Length: 261
Image (cartoon, rainbow, N blue to C red; front, top):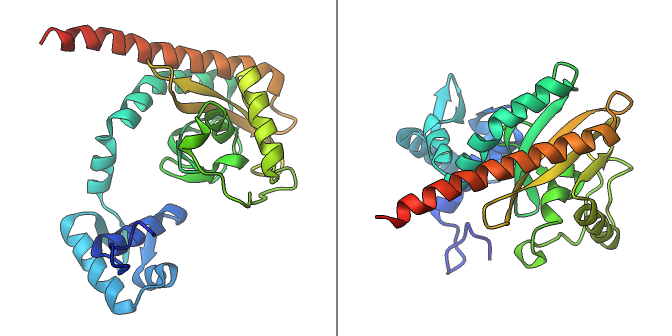
């Protein structure tokens, strides 16, 4: 049963509100009411009523005749401890890697079978890609996704029966994809060989928490021919290790303090 449904099968008000908010993930950030009706497939009167409620509570804001996500959503998102701590620990390392390479650098976590970007640093020499903070991308067509999936228990995610091709290089065969994850586990880094976008390559390495659970991945990407995957392999792995150590160090300081109370 879809999570937007109640036990009796009827779509709940919270479920309808969630579907409206989710439509902004794949947009420019501003949508009209007509676009919301079209994207959700809900009745026009339902969408207008739900949108008014969402504006009233601060989850949406009006921009002329259109709507955008409200600041309340940002404030709530910033309160998620795991993602906030990871982003804070990684930020200076991401900036340093971007400055050292001039390429695009990102921080992503796994959500279902997608990666969600917590932070993105655009390089001066990096291509302008659609990935943005809060944006999603299929994990199988992402070096970050492969880096996290390789170290995630297979019971904790469900692989789609069909892996969508984004380029001719995207791995769409589930058996071949599992072999790719085996290779990532062995070398500790995942590569994107023009699997997400044509002429774009990249590498990603997993970030681990104090309990050795994989938390996310740091990635670097650029134009094929302008970026040397062999050289950035070491850079991205070193950066991921540094972030993992910072997270462990912070935990080792916090735990004794909490235990004294």
